[in-house]
Image 1: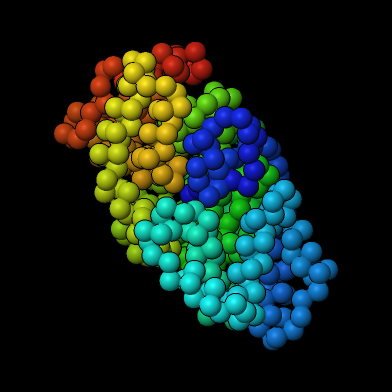
Image 2: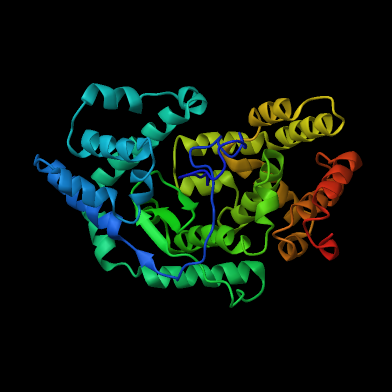
Length: 379
């Protein structure tokens, strides 16, 4: 849903640095499933639940397991320290006053403070893990995770309407306990184990296929162009997440988040979806102002950050849903890596559906911006 474990260019990209998890850089790896971090998590949480002391070496084993290693290697170690703190509060029943304060934070408070949001989401998730501890361990021991990966890849192929390109080697899947989400990162797909546990088999398959879509799309998109600056990144991510959400959320955000409750994020996402049309209009007007040299690039980015949330999931899903509603779904998937085509199809759909239309001025600006970076025949 959102991203980051590290950034590649620290001199640009406010939008790249706007979410809890911000940047994905891709590489080719073999297809596999790794549960090392889940097992290390169970070892330490079990000791904490029994009131036993956890040695530095045991913590180190957790930190250097596949799922958490990228956190431990960060210079400030904020994420791994937050994970360990949440584990101690929930399973070791320590710092009760601090835990209560974090759990009682309001939606408004966490919406404006991503650090507070992360801490609350972790505590919420870990408390749920504690309540279902025995069942989660049984799920770990008995579920066929390799079969899930195969089903997800088949689902992606079915969604795209063609076989997966045989030259593309998809990433391994690292399961761990973090926030209830999945992320396409540099070396693997990172999936929260509790989220997968809670889902139905169809939901698991579709959720993992959603993450594989991002992985697969990388091999067709113009990655250098998309990450050159904030505007390119934002316009591309709206398409990227908007199409991916059709894999696992085609029934709508209300239905999805009621079945796969990820509160308080679910409430925020549903609210963002309901205002997506007006938010898209705001983005349109901001970009047009920049195209006319009425505002600076920095001013444009600051204004966009007031509107663009969670990597554009809600706006992108609104746009892709309008495209599907208008009957252009297959066309959307034929050019699933080309941001100009996505906005062009949305404009056609908006005309047909009577929703907010992107102006010709906006489309001309976007076409001129992308025409040297994507094949002309796709336009």
